[in-house]
Length: 454
Ligand SMILES: Cc1cc2nc3c(=O)[nH]c(=O)nc-3n(C[C@H](O)[C@H](O)[C@H](O)COP(=O)(O)OP(=O)(O)OC[C@H]3O[C@@H](n4cnc5c(N)ncnc54)[C@H](O)[C@@H]3O)c2cc1C
Image (cartoon, rainbow, N blue to C red; front, side, top):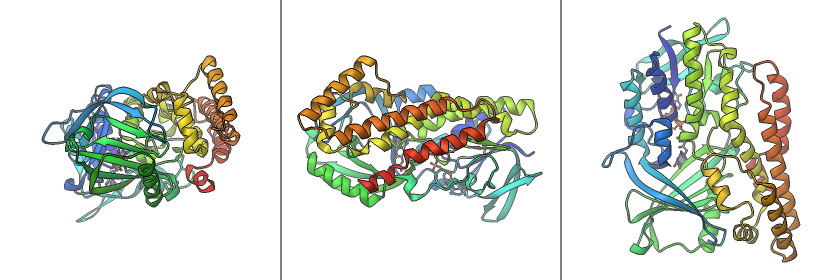
């Protein structure tokens, strides 16, 4: 084989994987359909927790290049902009295009080969098993052999969706109802006292106010499940309920992130799917840059060993990637997704009540979500919350149907945790597990469908 590993997609996930595999001495090729000058240019500013640079050993951005800002602290507010729940983490904002190029160079320094302007066409097969890819460049179609192909192509999932039915990884398309529509309003504030030093979020509207590279600027963001138009409608409701500092709009950026359950298995013979193509973004925030790296780290460990042991990487030899990822992050995200889908029927008054009384929306909950940890409540906390909810019903602040929907969504979240905890250790048992999982997700439904019924 010409390469041990071919990666389709040279953005953050593909480059992180490329670096980690190349520094272990494997021959890595990364292709991307974009030319170098457009890499990672889908939107300008993104941010990740400062702690993640150390956790994943990432290269640091530099002022005057990819660095945009750094701030400490986030405060989540109720639907009426009250009862802030503060968390204390430090966040670094970066320019996506420049940072992606930094990651490209970082992977190249370890020996990975990059081909820009090279678009995946299809797989090569021998004996019905993947053995490489065909890709298109300006000068024509080329082929390359590899012991494993990784799909890191983001939402289009160009390689995964080309897999034949039954190959071992689901080949579904990420459809418009499976996406989270993010609109970033880049604004300029007029009054110095309003300049943004940390992020304020408003979970009821899925809106936020974040710093921008320009200290007088801010990003007013909104994420929505149905469409950009729906997001704008919610943004208007947000502005009416929570007065914002006086500002002028500079420009708007839009983009989408996946919002659906990941494929049940990430691996098949000679194949793995990662990043947005595997729907690994955080269900509560839509962020996906470092949540993808959790799976990459596990994959690197397993694939590195498998490549040293055998010529060809079978589904069985890669299987532990599924199990280990689910244990570390997958089951938490799956449960969060199931819980959030059911919990959307709360109205603004109820949301304000929950914030006021620390029911679900407590400082502890936001700290857990920020850290990617499960939302767990002690018996004492549960009893306290039930008492407060009863108070809410008696005083007319909460509707019984909301409580019912919340309890139901928490139950569904728990069921999904139990289901994913029982993910099979080996390929045997997977078919049966998948059937059970299908039934669970059918009951949970999709966020878009739930919103349409409200
Ligand atoms: C507006 C917005 C703001 C966001 N902010 C944040 C944030 O602050 N923090 C955070 O963590 N996440 C954020 N996210 C989510 C984050 O952008 C994604 O989770 C992350 O970029 C996914 O990275 P990826 O490498 O998996 O995929 P992508 O970044 O989508 O990269 C896929 C790559 O594959 C290439 N490709 C596609 N088709 C082909 C083909 N046929 N052949 C070869 N190559 C191909 C593409 O050109 C691209 O370079 C945001 C998303 C949006 C929309």
